[in-house]
Image (tube, rainbow, N blue to C red):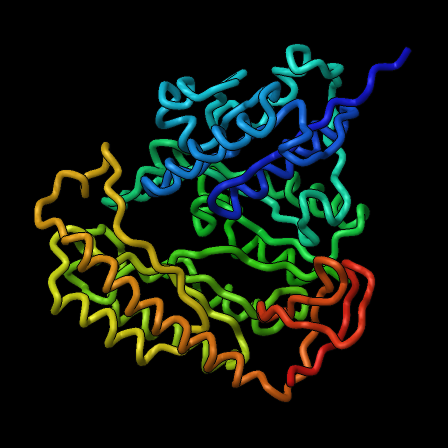
Length: 408
């Protein structure tokens, strides 16, 4: 008698890179006959963790305990940055089958297949269909690790040095994804702008984007977060001239004070960032341009915070992600004095988020009356435009369908 397939669920925290990693794990589980389920019904739950903030760590612990409380017999595998940084803390949680570091994540299923109760397969790796894990677009990781030295960031410790997938392998993965039906692919990396530097064969992010810009199939490529110094004029030119590339940028600023940027060890000035965003907006006034900000970094004065507010008010950004500074033991920033009081950090975060809400509203209003190409998502009653607006539709469509939407 053939045994029933193992039911699995994957819970993902954090960045697009983690989303891509989780999809790869789901692909490997699916190839061995496992079927996706809810955490409450699954026999196996994989938790792919983030550790960029203390809140992320806490969220993982709470989630594992809740899953086990609701499903006492479930077996839990925890991987990702928190599992890499603090495996001992993870092992103290209930029902933990294995703690898998980032270095071992790519072949997690292959190594643990027998113990999980799955057949060992060689060379498996079929691309999943759109809609797996609730995602219509595919997030494809082309790079991991980081060689930068931002003083607040623990990720170079948890992800290691920058490592890129060869261009030929990336092209093959994209071809497989297009054959499987994907119409939008987000290109992601921990430090995406460094793509190709470690390959020593002349490959660069610009050469990859050039390939994407000339892709034959009707697919949209969305470039994930880029550090400001990596968003070159060549990349902006390619995005502005090719219908294959989404007019969507995510460029972390982190702070509007040059003194704070130096303390964070960010290799650009606030004025250079303003010039970059302004130039993109001049070329592509309809483009979505998002950013990340940190409030409450050690030593941040009210005057320095005011510089951030001032810089933001003059920027044509479309949305903000705001992070209260979170101390990460092992980083240089954790050794700094001048800690900002919690109430002050919360107030500053609220003020920056308010600016972000105003930016988002201004951008939405600027798009009123325009017609954009969009991909239908969820239940077919909504779609995401090329410039990253989620809109409601007047009539239902099939999921993963291109539609032209007039924004009113």
